Image (cartoon, rainbow, N blue to C red):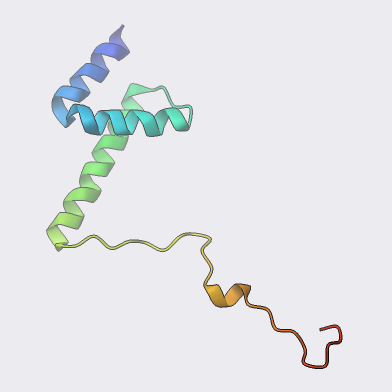
Length: 82
């Protein structure tokens, strides 16, 4: 019951939509701890504030992303094995 009340207080402080998004993300990782959800919201707020202060949001590259040239293959012109 206390965790449900704490979750309702989070909705009052951060807005229901933000809390719903954080809860969906937490459930995806099997996290059911309200203090951890609150930390997620606080960290997201700090990130949002930093991006707004700079005036733009910079998209970070994917951690394991590779460029298209990584997947190109070349076959030898003589038709033999590479």
